[in-house]
Structure formats: C-alpha cells, structure tokens
Length: 118
Length: 112
Image (cartoon, rainbow over all chains, first blue to last red; front, side, top):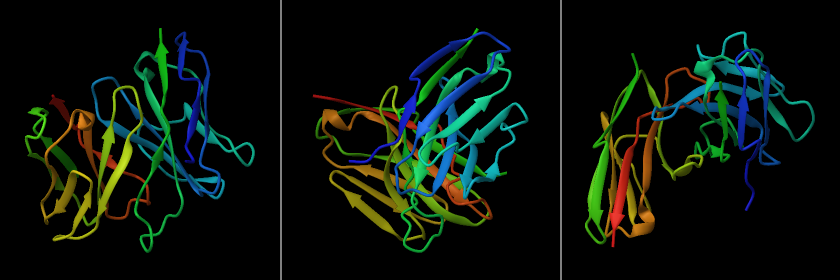
C-alpha cells in the first residue's frame, strides 16, 4: 500500500540552527501539506502546496519557514532559525486531488518527524 | 471564529461496550467534516468524510453521522484494537482544500 514517508523520525537541534524535514509523498498525488502537533495539543495546519507553489499558509508559517519540492519525489520543510517553541511533531501529508467532486477529502499522513529544540 | 470541540476527552470501554464520540463545530460554510484515527506516535489515519447533514458512513465497527452542528462517531462492540485517539477535523468556507482544522481528539481505551 502506498504511503507517505518522512525523515528523520527524530531530530534534536540547538536553538537558532536550521532544520530540514524531508517527506516523500505518495507518487501520484498532486497536493502536499505540512501539519504540526505540539505535545498534548491539536494537530495544526502549516501550509499546503500545489503546482510548485504555496496554496495557503497559516499564521504559524512565518518567514522562518519555507517549503520546497526540489525534485519529482521529495517535499521539504525548512525552519531557518529554530526556536524552543518549534519543538513538535511535524507531519507531512499528501492527497490526490483538490476538488470536492470525486474527492473523499482523504489526506494521507506520514508517521511524523519529531523535532526537539534545545 | 471557527471552532471544533470534541467530547469526551477520554473514554474507557469494556470490549463489546458500544459508545459514541461527539464533535461539535462552528464554521463558516462547512465543506467537509473528517474523522481520523491516531495511534500513539503515529500520523492521523483517515476514516471518513461527511459533506452534508444527514449523511452517514460506516466502516467495520465505526459509523459516522453528521448534523448541521455536530458529528458523532459510533463505535459498536469495540475491540481492544479500536483503542486510539479519534480526531475530528473540518474543512471550512473558502479555505483551500486540505486545510483542515482539527479538534483535540477523544482518547479511547478498550479493555478486554
């Protein structure tokens, strides 16, 4: 069964360092997303990406964050200068289509990358 | 402000003891309501999408229903493997597809 894969599973970094989280979405999907979940809190939307550009981003996704699809298979989230409050589980997700017709609204999530900022 | 509220926060069931989880929402123009299952340390796993009031979806021991203000996830004769956190999420108004607003979840524990 196709799945979304994420690396690394856990990353520990020092405050102020740059971090890149990597995702390989399901191969024939067109829409890509990053969500995050701070321990004990809700899953929060960060950004959606389609056709090589950001479709929508949340207030959380400030200038410290960026996304990129550097090739035909990878989708990355970069945090330029990490803060303590960036510690969270980051989930990548993908979906096949964006329209409501014929779309179950099913997002396929990866298992997450746990980021710990010290 | 759009809100998604789930209750109860936690639910402990005996195997075979049916129950319901609630998700109440206040959003501008609901486009879809979603149920996901999340196991500890894992990503959410899609269960159902509901688009309009009166709609129902079923999968094994789970059944999801939708009204204009809330959704229920009914668990019939649960088994220990149904233990998980169940998340409700909404897609609202003019938000782009895939931008979901999640509730805090209901943690379900089913004991043998």
